[in-house]
Amino acid sequence: MASEPKITFKLEEVLKEKGVGQTEMADSIGIRRGTITAMKKSDKVNIKYLAQIMQYLELESVDEILEYTPAEKENS
Image (tube, rainbow, N blue to C red; front, side):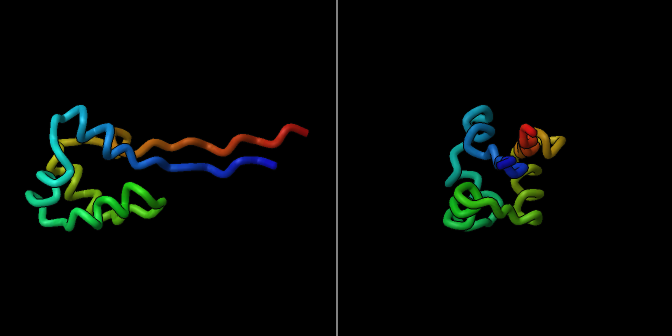
């Protein structure tokens, strides 16, 4: 069976690289910490919040915080 494509939210990695804590970021941009935690744990990322996070972290491309992994094709 072929795997499904996947998009990974790399927030934890980016926060570490930038030296910023999740609580600090959440408080600065007005997003509840629980909302950010939920985004990190699920496959659902709110686009509005993603834009606010990217602006706060001074990211220029979604590639810096989202990673796309294509589906593996089934061997015939």
